[in-house]
Image (cartoon, rainbow, N blue to C red; front, side, top):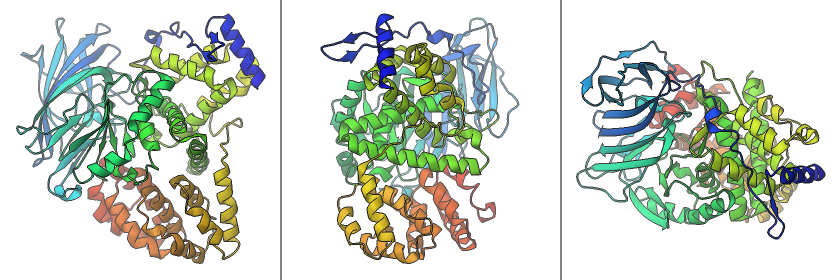
Length: 637
């Protein structure tokens, strides 16, 4: 295979797609401009918007945040660009109260709400005139808006002031903003947001670093973003600078711990820039949200939203920050054209995440992450097959008449990562990095789909080399089900040692060697150990592990969730009080889904799940409870 890569490299030199510098042993970027961004056809099965005829380009947004009524009252002024001759602008909305619409700021017009559905909401249809340049919409949100979570003071770390945050991915922006709600439509924006005194407002834009007495804040985002990357957070927040262009926001009691955990972010930014070019968003800050945040992180430009569950105290979960930082290139800079190609965002981002962690912590460390990625992928493919969802093991999936949230499985992340790793290992890292750098610079602030990306790979990577094409199996990776037989299998010596020690313990009662080794384990080694315990492990063995390591009372959320899952499956009742506390106070869907799923497998567990869920559901973001509602009996709600 090395010979194929070398031959391919030579061919690229001869055709001027790549040139080599012998002294530096580097590869120049290929010229991808003959595959113009303008030639990419964008469609979106999850949007009503007519963006191929009339497209929004800039948003001026003014809003007042009302915690008492749990609503946002706002005016959105859209600058539009006509692509065709259509005399209507169609925007996505869901459960919005649209009050008035004006053309060019002053001329009020009649609008209508088109036929919609429970999944996608309703189209807002606005008649246009020949001279229409802007459309102004006065509206208010619903207290149950799917993107918004309103937290009472008791649900925050400080327990004194309320909190609001948005989570718009995938199609929830339309629940707080009438917009063309798809990743293929980008716009710049400026905003004025008024909030109660004593609270700080932040957006995915240029942000303040201190509170204003009048509660009025202004924002500007000069780089075009899709609607799912528009974000808002309001709370009792403070800021600490970390580097020249990075910092962290958090509630006052959380800020010192967060700043210590994230102190290496400036180095991570430098490492990523060295790989794939300059960071193009100006500032990179992280906002630590209350624990009800449904995801590990959200890559809102300039302001990553992060779960407090990554504050492990030892920087062992910084892979999540690396992932969100990587989105500043993959996803935010170059975006999937619609949600059927979410792997273009997440697969590339997971690949870059691993490269960042390798640069930051070394190859051995990143290979532990890669091995866990592979293990998770194998389990998820088996699970999806068992559920009759084999089609969803494809990278490019069908989301017609479906909630695109159904595509946010581990497949686009982990299968996507292994696909790109396969390319790197086949053609060589220098050649692959040169392609990626050209890809990001060529398609900056644009969207791309699977068919275009496959064409790029076939043109600039395969380049008519039939042996290389047979080796890579690009179409099978992108359009085929399951995992191709040429998938890389990450192997790490540290995990192999754990397997040996674990097996020895399982076959005997002697835990001495395991105890000695575990004293120096990282989070990832613990996860490998727990996740690979035998399915039929005895209660006595679990009790022995717990007596020595006290995993039931771990303060590391990743270890807690893994240990609780194994314990629930074996009915190790000691963990149940801690499971209850964990599920009530943590809203991260990654943890909730497997734990509730495991609980409802038995009558006793189902009763416990229903009891916990009655108390916990009000603490969850809609993204989480809409998933858990399907697991726990509706009669218990």
